[in-house]
Image (tube, rainbow, N blue to C red; front, top):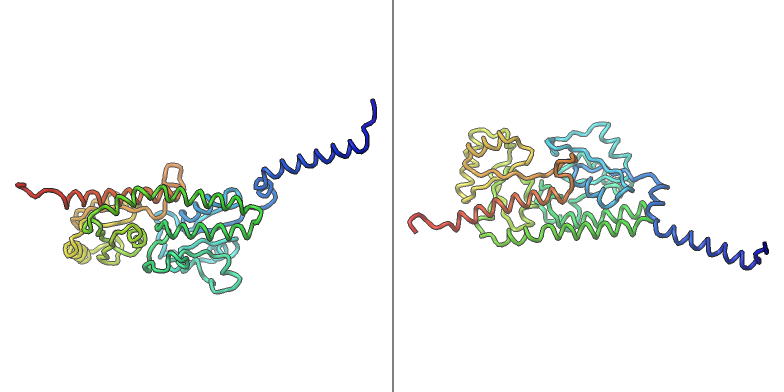
Length: 310
């Protein structure tokens, strides 16, 4: 066999090296994921954890604190919880509604690790006490900021994070558009919705609906006197629909309807990681918008129904 000339041999080696390098460029993200531990992200609620999972992919290990059925305001800080929040790479929080999650936010070391919804531009005018992740415009801003923080921690994955951000925002806008149009078309009186707190104000106002606060109280603990106040506020404002949490048992919902004379509409704030539940942010928002459209649609039919004898 004739020996391969040195120049030809070197050329072959160079071509092989270039091919290997080009092949590696097709999979930068998989190499980075294999080489680095996932970033630990702790969200106060499941919807924010799910968004982190959607944007971060395998580069993120996301968990959350408040489970369905638990009270966000009533959550107590414990040494275990403080340690969990202090040692993770990133904390995702609604902000002032969760003081236990933003302790030490003014610390220059801690602040970059905390992403608060209430400090985003789109949330500046949000009512105090509102669950800001129910507002899709706030979530758009949140996703943009989340991408930035993830890219700072994993610079090589910046193109992937940017792609996931863009896909998420597109899916969100596509989802809300038909509901936005239906809610905007409803008459003014049908847009009034009674509430027992400020939790749903950001969601309602974003879609042009008017929250009417009857009284700040837990729906499971309404006394006869409080029920009388609810009925009076509903009558004075000509409102026939009241919002409550989706995790309220059916028996309690029926009891509220009987005691108040109102139609009770349930809103899902927390979702569920269970396979059969609303286990993505988009599914949670879609359910809530369907609930609102159904409620406003029924009110629209009532306000346009011909009077008896016509």
